[in-house]
Each structure stands twice: as structure tokens, then as C-alpha cells.
Image (cartoon, rainbow, N blue to C red):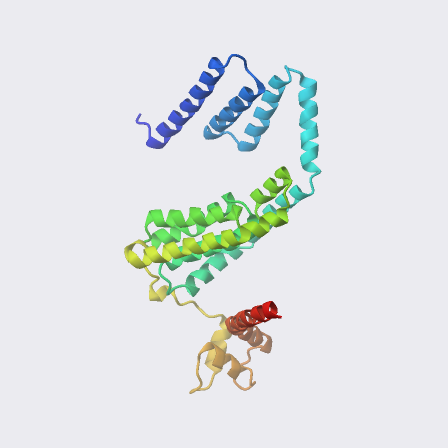
Length: 320
């Protein structure tokens, strides 16, 4: 049976790690705790590469080598294990990790990411590489709800990767967009990695969040710029969205409103909604539905006014 290149590389790497560890132990005049630590690290890497669960691998290796370092004293090993577990459980900072993971689980189960991905894809249909750009933006938004890499990559791999392949995207570009966007989860706050690092190193997690926010957003912007440039230079790698896929069906109430609009009135969203609010042209559509749809239609204008107000107010504050 012919061994695949990936398996050959993995086995070669594991053999190299074990050979280096064995040579270090043989050539050392005496085995110290430092040698045991390097040996434990090497065996942890090999065990994870062989497919053992990471949590049980770390826990098992830690207990075994603690028992060896304490000269096979079981009481000291168990006492240290209990103290370490209690120290982690009593850390107030680490409590936020399961809550962030639970928040990401709720977002995924509520099917919000799929709706967000579809909306961004349609909104950026005219942008080169719109599907990959929507994937990166969705990863950046989802990163703020999970703070980890695996959940983002897994979900977007199941959601966006098949669509990009069906749309004719290059496999390397599609896989790169998902993996690059998934890595934003450990940088854009809230990040589980920053929480663990802050709790371990004794650094303020708030300061770490403040220092990682701008680099995370900048990295997401660079990824999007790269995809747009590649799609512009090589359109065959990221074909544009066909015109028939850029149209979506309106809700039933909106169709009913359009049928009730009198002839000669503009049937675009904003004029139709304003005309429906007059009462005689709403075709029985509830006023609450019209107001909600009008709010959605005016949301980009409200955001533009807010942005312009911030641009004007910030220099005034600096001057005053």
C-alpha cells in the first residue's frame, strides 16, 4: 500500500522529534527536570499528531511527568493536581471562556451566521470576489462571538466553501479565505487566547483587548484587499455573481403592497413604503410592517449621517 505524502511527512516529523529527544537524554550526563520537561513536550506533540484528544493528552502527560519529577510520590502528585485544578476554577478571568463559547454556540444554533453570510454576499455582489469577501467579513463578525479558531473555520467550511466551489472559485483561494478569516478569532476581541494569556501572565485582559482590536481589524482589511486585487487581476479565480442570483424574493406583505400601489407611482422601496403609509395605498398591509421596512431602508442613510457627525465632532473636541 502506497503511503500518502501527508502521512509520510507526519511520520517523519514524529520520528525526528523522538530521535532528537532520545539523543538529548542519552548524551546528557544526568537527567534533570529540564530534560523531563523537554521530553514531556516532545511526547505531547507526538501524541497530538497521532490523534489523541488534546485535553486528555495534556492532563495525562502532566500527571505522569509530575509523578516522575516527584520521585514516584503519588501523594505529592495528587495534591498538586488538586491544587492546580482549584486554582484554575477559582480564577475569575477564566470564567468568561465558557460563556464566550456558549455565546458562539447560541449564534450558530440561531442560524444567524448563515443569514449574515447571505446578506453580505448579496450586498457586495458588485465587488470583485464578493463571495470570498463576504466570507472574510462573516468570519470577522463571528470571531467577536466565539473567540476561538476551530468553530469559525468549521462552520464557514461547511457554509461558504461548497458555495465558493459551486460558483467556480479557485480551491486555493476559497480555502485560504476560510482559514485566514478563521484565524481572526484569536485576535479580534473577545479572544479566548488573550484571556488565557492575560490570566497566565498576570496582564490586564482589557489592555490586551485594546491592543489587539486595531491589528485584528487591519488584518481583516488586508485580507479583503488581497482578495479583491486577486479577483480583479485574475477573474477566473473568483467569478462574479450571476445576475439571476442577485435577486431575492420579497416577503408576501411587500408583494401585497406593490400590488396595491397605484399605476404611475415609483415602485422602488422608499417611494412605495412612503406611499403605503398614506393609508389608501397600503392594500391592507399593517402600518407596523411598513414602519419596520422603512427603518431598514433608511438604515444606511442613518449610518452615513452618524459617520459624518463623528467626523465633524471629533476635530471639534480636539480643538476645544
